[in-house]
Amino acid sequence: MKTQKRDKLTRAHAKGYQAGITHRSKELCPFQAIQARSEWLGGWREALTDRQSGLVGR
Image (cartoon, rainbow, N blue to C red; front, top):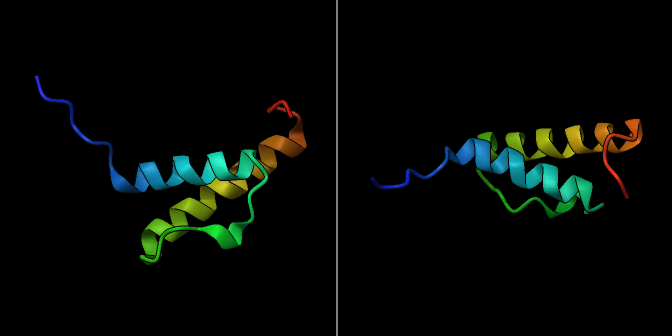
């Protein structure tokens, strides 16, 4: 059975979350499309919240 690729917007969110966890700047968002950029920034903001709450180790 072939493996299906994940939804691009889900992937953008996950990549943004990883960038936020690793303290990368939101200015480094690699996406130009508005929807993908929005998802990436949403993931980045979620990671910031998780870091501030102490849910993620440093």
